[in-house]
Image (cartoon, rainbow, N blue to C red; front, top):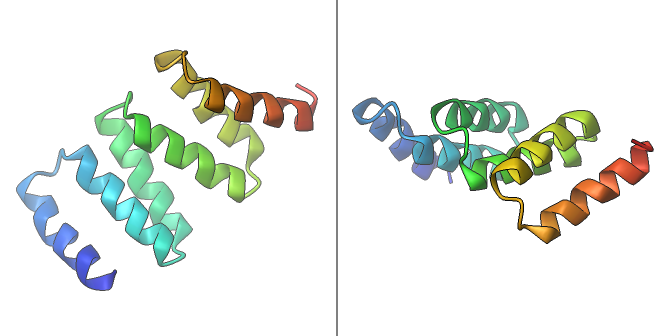
Length: 102
């Protein structure tokens, strides 16, 4: 994983607006249990491409496992605004809403 992260960091200056590279860095950071860096990379990916399906789901999941429920719900809601037919994600959001009574 470390060598993959090094390669991605070397590639990043060649295309600093690559939302995919930031997403891959986020995945690698998560695998290394560096959730702070994962969050940073996901937010950068979404800054570059706000409708990025995988990044939206990943950051919502990241916040959910960190028990940051309100942040998680926010990104699930954003995701569903772009992809309203995703019933599985809607079920996850409904479950979170039930847990927080909102």
